[in-house]
Image (cartoon, rainbow, N blue to C red):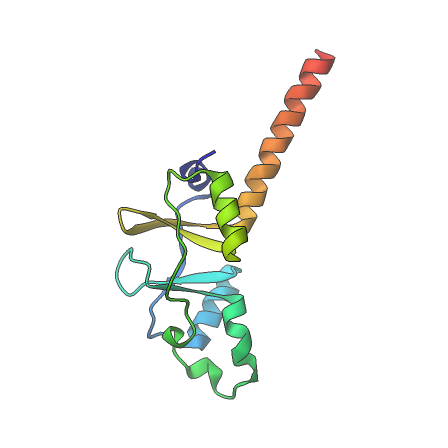
Amino acid sequence: MRIDEVVRRKGHEVVTIRSDATIGELLDLLEQHRIGAVVVSDSDGRVDGIVAERDLLPLLRENGATSRHVRDVMVHDVVTCAPKDELETLARTMTEQRVRHLPVVDEERMVAIVSIGDVVKNRLDELQAERDHLEGYVHG
């Protein structure tokens, strides 16, 4: 299965934030959308960085952390994938790079984001379809 098929099922919505936003604004977005990462984009469709929950953990000990800027904590070297990439390749990349969210980029523009939860869900759906097919074959 390719990433574009996963995106077609889940949708293209990506929550983004500008790098000059505050950590407080970032926390509001994470809570409001109940997500674990936000893509940083200072221009329409470009991936400038990403901030995941784990990037915020060191800030918990700082006073005034919520007034700092997103650019202070974002990951600049963002691992991305393309719509034509295979899901299995994506799963390996996520495991090897230790990331749970990958922006999907097509011709240098972000078109979606895929999470480890999306990968697991699609794999479970595939396994269920295989199981149903085998049960139908055995009982049919």
